[in-house]
Length: 139
Image (cartoon, rainbow, N blue to C red):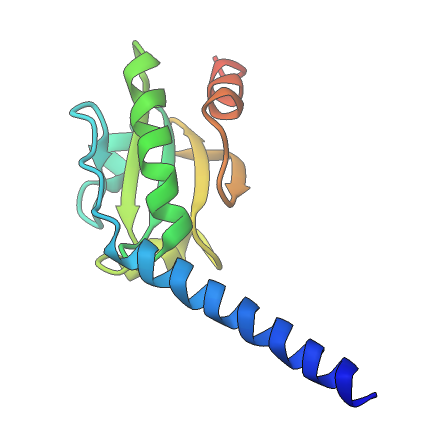
């Protein structure tokens, strides 16, 4: 019984150490610069930027590890889009009212808008192929 508890305690310690190490590495990871075609969305320009466009909006924050993992994916998707299809990003630390308005409860949350109207919502890290497929389904 004691050996089982010792082994279990040791395993829990290793898991905690691994989680701490991973979290610290994510915090040190530099923010990826947004592709030039990505729209930076604010309280002031949100409605105007979505007008007459299909926009996949990423609600994110600098401290969010999964959000940092999504940045290069969104850059790649943005490079492949043309016409009125765009990627937009809204920093929920700076624009909390946008997160409240669209009931964003966890991040990253990606909301697909068509002319300012929500069409679909995705929570968590998504692949480039998944996002391109969802964007191509909207005309």
